[in-house]
Length: 327
Image (cartoon, rainbow, N blue to C red; front, side):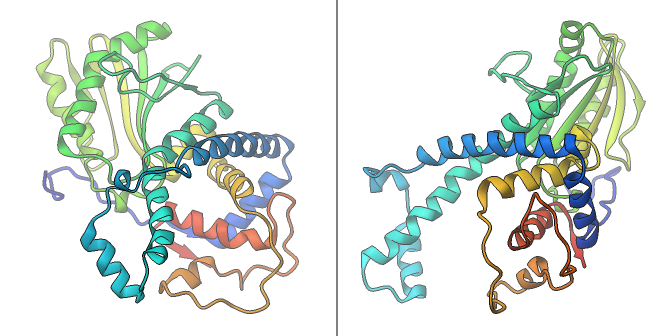
């Protein structure tokens, strides 16, 4: 489907401010309930990560199972001026770890974060009425349900249509099981921004708009044209559907400071504090220095949840949820 499809909303630039992130961090640090959530998230993330990474690569791993390209191996060796196989092995292992974690890290984050904010993880059994769901907020009315994807470019046209079909086919069952007459359905993306999306997510809403009137009693209440949400009535159930990407998803899940809480917990669980560097590092990646710079962070800035050496990690992770990072 063309990116310029009629009705496709313009994606506004998402801007983050380092100073606002630091103010949010202070708010969380000064709130006992928020700090408790961060510590709970951190503990659960640590357990998940330890279990997951231990199973990634065993000492007796078979080279053939890595499915490497011989051409890539040689080109990489030429670029690094390698002369022995031992040198390239050291690069293969972390590269394959990255690849393996790409497919499972999102689900791991979901399984930890959803329960902390009161949601249930939904067992998405294939070919069942719940196969399109990953999360559900029990007791909510309208019932909040969500399908979640790790990043903003995970969908293709067929998947967009399948998600719309799932909503149209199973809305009544989802609502009936919860004893409600209305649903709030979210296609949620764990990181990214609307500008970074391939826009296939919006086509879920377009498909709902086009398919709903063809069903008996189906009605479009709010068109998704030029917006990231819509509302329909299908099988006697009113469904509000929305695409929520990155920060919007986390705000929907747990409020304004949810994202900073999750990022803080992950950093605490993954990055050990370290002494302040004695000299400024020269990064090879052009914009990385500006992204992670803490030059403008007040020398007196102090919170208990993160050490100063961990603040560059906060800015690095936060950059995945915005299009521009301001000082």
